[in-house]
Length: 139
Image (cartoon, rainbow, N blue to C red; front, side, top):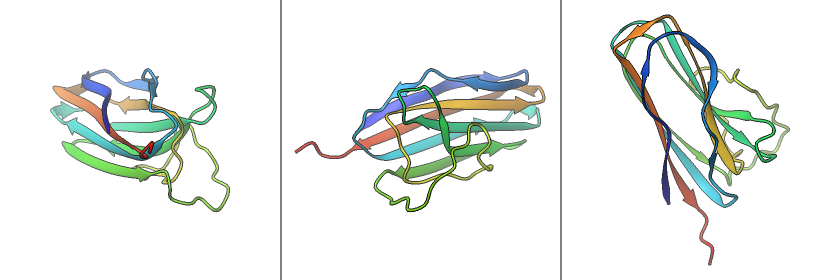
């Protein structure tokens, strides 16, 4: 099991569009991916949307697997995505357009990153996203 900080506590101030974080290598043996989103609202601002993305081609392209969205209230949210869930129909990848507060289970590549956008000017507001990665036993 590994704990990874995807976005350290970050002050949210001016509006930003499609900011991406440095990809985190999570390896090919991920059993589950726990995601923790912590949005601490101060005042002002309008909307914060954070996409958790994965890649299946070494980081050449990215697809959304979870979306967290907040407006003008503090929120803590969790997802637990499991790689062994069967995906029996073709999934259409999205890049920064997954519906708010939804996830796509069963699709976890070998790396993850965040893409986030905010609207309006927040004051005294912070955002943090962390993960817990559980791997299949190598025995």
